Image (cartoon, rainbow, N blue to C red; front, side, top):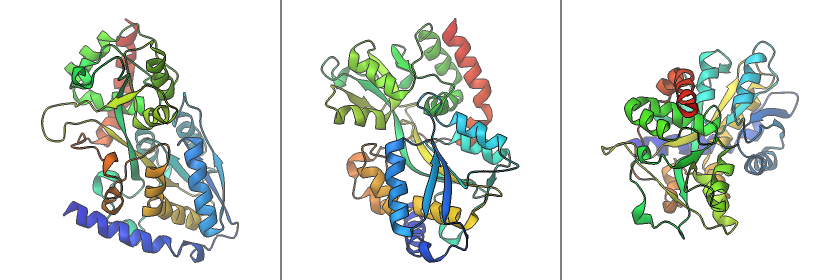
Length: 331
C-alpha cells in the first residue's frame, strides 16, 4: 500500500515538474539556494534545473568539516531578512531544527501531499529524498566480509568524523535510542582522533591507519571509483524488523518569507522528481532512490530492512546526546 501511495505521489510530482517553466510569477528569474550536498552533485542538479526551466540558480555551499551546521546557523541569523529561497541539506536534523525555529515555510502543493510520511514533515515544511546509508568502510584485502561484526555496537576500533557535524551528528543522535549500547561503543572509542569529515574517514581506512571507518555510502562509492581497495558493510542496530542500518535522506525546504516563493516551490517539486532521483542514483554519490519506479532501475542500491527511526525524536535530543558522546570520547 505504501509503495502504491508513493507511486501515485511521485507520478503527480512528475506531471507538476513538466509544467514548472510556465508556472512562475516571480519577476526576478533567479533562485537562491543554500546547499550542503557535495558541490559536484549539486552543480549537476542545478544545471539540469536551469536547462529545463531557464531559471538561474545562485547557490551557497558549505565545507566538508561543518557540513550543514554552518548553513543552519546562517539561516537562523537571517530569519527576519532571508536571503535564501530554498535550503537543500544533505541530512535531516538541521532541517528539523529550522522548522521548529520557524525558519521554514510549509509547501502544500497538491503533488506533494502524498509524499511518504517517513520522508516529510507533518506540516509539509520539509521533504526527504535520495538518502545515503551509514556504513562501515573496510579494506577487503585485509578483512574478509565474513569476519565483520553484525552490529554497530561492535565497532569500537572504528574511526569517525567529528560527531558535532553532518551525518555523523545525525547518526550519533539516532543512537540515543540505544543508550547502553551507545555508551559502551563510544567509551571503547575514547582517545581516538576525530577526523575532518566522512571522506577523511574513508581515506584513513585506505591509508591503513584505521581498521574500520564509520561513514556514508557515497564516500565509499567515491573511493571505489578512484580504484582504492575499499568496501562497505551495513551493520544493524538491533536484530528485530526495522533494525538495519540508518538511511539519512537529503532534505529540501522553502525558506519562510523568501523573495521567490513560486520559484522555490517549483524547485522543490523538481528536486523530488523521478528525474532527479535517477540523476542522483547514477551519480558518483549513488544516492538511494525512494520512488518505486526508480528503485526498480537500481536494485543494487536498495538497502534491505533499514532502521525505522523517528528523526524528530533524534533532533530533540541531539544537543544533549552529542555533548555526552564528546565527553565519553575525551575521557
